[in-house]
Length: 321
Image (cartoon, rainbow, N blue to C red):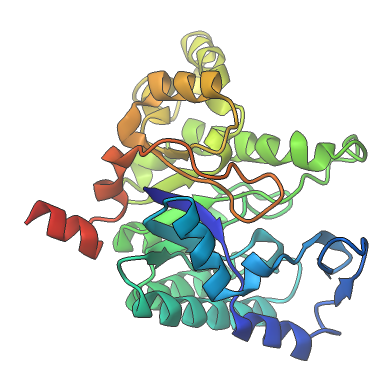
């Protein structure tokens, strides 16, 4: 079984955080004696720093226990660092990418990885992506844009042009929503995370993004947020309003099928609907391991999409030989 949605923090990144602790306002907080310390960066995005986030051996052992034979490792969204200067974000991105590339090179049958980029400087993001692909990474994980700038904006063109040229995976993974209405009952995570994906993905879909960048492999976290389950509403808008149909050559449902989705939904009925809406060849197993809300172990094999996302993976090549 594959798991396309896992996270890890290499030891070089932990050392970088210690070294730049004051610059990025990193702190380690003991909130509960029964839990590991929480890592907090820039006074937000705190999360429990479980051993499986930082211990390579333990991470791999847990994958084996869950019968996961190949894991795609991503940086954690809390360390995107878009709030800081591009120089800081670029430096961290390069350390993260080099560390993950070094790890997966030692276990190519077991691991693939995505990198991270300084999305706050799209030209630098393009350069870092190109370097990440040269190192053997399969693409990058990014957030759903910057404040007040959607990913469809021309501002990001240098990055997406490079991603299109590289035929890279671009895994869109939101951070907690900062909507002021969502301040309690864990709603920034429960509702805010899929909401941020929904807004970003709907914008990309309606902008005609996949026509402009047909070779970028957009993977949407958490089953695509709420978008797949309201695609009928977008289809209705397409038939009613020129503002909706202007950039599209077909109904929104057809564009939805050009994205890829993970299975992090925790609900079989929701997953069955997603399969019906986009087809198994655009769904990959995922878990969000080892965050608290991980869907562990990942649900189903859903390997029809693997050759399109990892065409040069050694195990796949051997299977086809």
